[in-house]
Image (cartoon, rainbow, N blue to C red; front, side, top):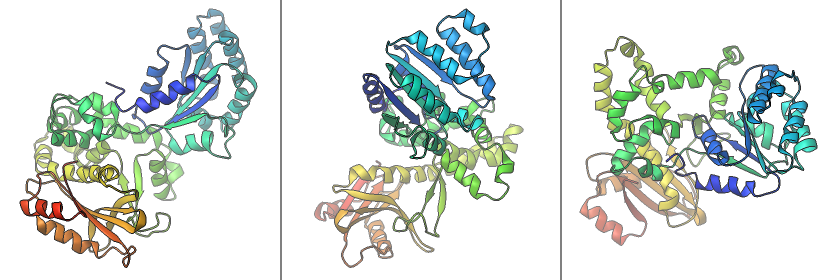
Length: 430
């Protein structure tokens, strides 16, 4: 069950394993399943796995040494004092001779944090000791921009060594029915709205129950790790407050680096110089936590949850509707019968359009999402067509399409019109 939607990544790793020598970089946000993927891959292979942390370098070397000793059952090595990485890797090479072997360093970026020269040290060790051996090296990490700068960027000491890279993404919504059996599409959207495709969160809730049941029984339980997860996540990664005393922009950069928030501008604007910038939390559980747990922690501390539960019951459909919009935008790549260049939103001071997609040959798609108990009728289409006039993009020479998403379906008149007009697309749910 853990490897739903991970087939391509496993194919990549297995392909790299068959090479005489390979160097794979795996990166992605915390809890997305990188370590689980690696451990599944190496479970039937000769391998050494090391998880780096923020301890000082001497302690990391000592731990690395002891784990090698355990791995190769060498009691003498445990008693020997080693203070440099070269000696450790020289020993490792003597143990593996030339049989196929996988070397994994997880959270690699921490070794670079405690020693800014570690990437250079590892590059030299790789070139001198590992490159010509029958070894598959896997470097993995969660600080996305740091993993990029230390392992993938042109000016990185390790540039040019990798044979493959994997940016591990959350589980796509379309695979949710593999995790949650006998659930309606609406149930799945609601469950996605509090787990967001993060495998750790999916596996931590009661998958037989509804989203609202899990909110009350798990997310609102002070003894459940999910209740405090965002605090620990942010404190661990953004812990040196003095570094950010100059303003909030460094915080934002850090959160973007962690793949927790993303920058958004109207689709027709340039993301680098637009003044209409919004920052959006990418993770659905964090969205929920900041909306319904963090502001009401006083209620949780005195275990008076009536107010918060009532608030959730009254607002949950509105909260889910925003996630529904995200899913609708994501599904555009599959729902539109011509190539798209960009998909996003558009807004100005007076108007907001849920979906705008720019296509080849001056094609443009405008979309509206309705997550309500009412059917969508002609009036909604007409409103969308009016709003579309505000969007300046190839106005004199564009081919317009309109797509409507509705939880509760469409009126007969709208369905009849969509059958006649090829530029109107109707989608029930996703």
